[in-house]
Length: 506
Image (cartoon, rainbow, N blue to C red; front, side, top):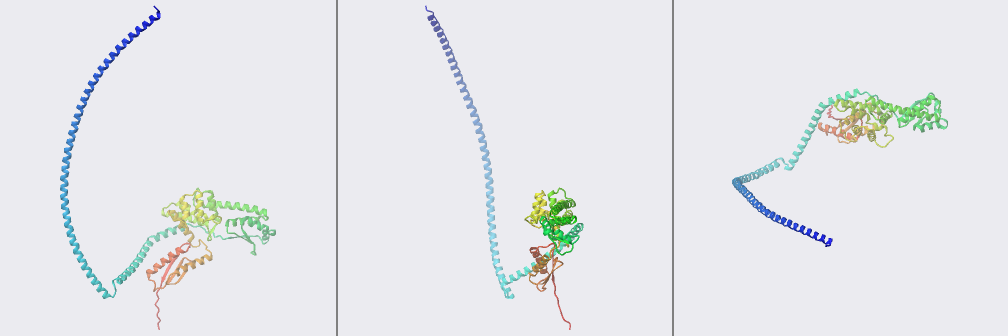
């Protein structure tokens, strides 16, 4: 037999055996699956029954709870219905009671209306009788009464004003006088009065020719370099320097004095001396600024601001040296702050710097207040200092006590006798304006501005003014002068009402 055929037969036998074994295993697996399925069906049925029983028990419990809640709700509703029934009965009783009261009130109102008509009839009869007796209508009588009331109220008002003013003056006048006089006595600042010209003394009149130079070249050089006018006239042994800028005038004066001492006067030497004089004046300016700050015990002042402050040494206002004035304001403001418990350091620093803008107001645009505020802010001054500078002439409302004190100190320093020197023309114009304001009122016989414009005396027609009207006139005049006129210090208004009776003995 062929070997390949034998192998095929063997393989077929083996395959047949494997298939038979697999079929046996499949039958066993199928039987086991059927058995498991039967077991699962039994368990599922058992679980369903148990779940059904548990659901019925839970449903029964919920039913019992709902029944119990329902019974409680019914009982609560019953109680609420009882309460509402009782309240409804009470409301019906109150409504009935209010209805009875309304009826009684209406009856009373009807009675009052009848009485009101009766009284109105009586009043009308009395008014008619009064009009017949007095010869005046009710409206005329009412007007007369109102005018009398107005007059009486005006008198009482003026009387109250006078009484209140007297009381305020009694309480405040002595204290304010004490504070101000003490402060002013403690501050003794020498006043330096400057003008727009300086005089340089010469050793002899021959020096005038040397100053003029050949064809005037020396004087032209000096005037060009300093910006000052040299006036050489017939005045013996003197040359006059004229300039609105005191710093330029001081530089020219120092340079000219150096040239006179040196004796060599020519354009090159003039230029050298002017430069030296300028350096000396700049040094002097810084020293004056430092000395002022040290005098006020002010530390930490910016160097540029110190230099600007020192320029006030050569600046005048109404004939008053501005640096001396600033020192005086600082001292007065500091002492007032000490008396009143305010910040002394801020008051002194603001007082010293309040007019710093005047150092540059001749060369820059803007008021000295605007320039001072700008300088203070630029060089790092605190806002309290800046505000005091801005408020010292009421450009803005002073909202700190130190700003108010600086304004007061400025007025004291500028307004005290001898502090300032107005020009004659300004002085005369102010006096004329004061008398013009006073004479604008009716009933004025005469008015006189006296005591260098510090007081105005008003003589009125006695038949047109009583005591209260005179008091009111004085207040009105003072207010109008404040509104229309600028003046240093204060102006007293005195109203004189005089009655004269004259008879002739024969």
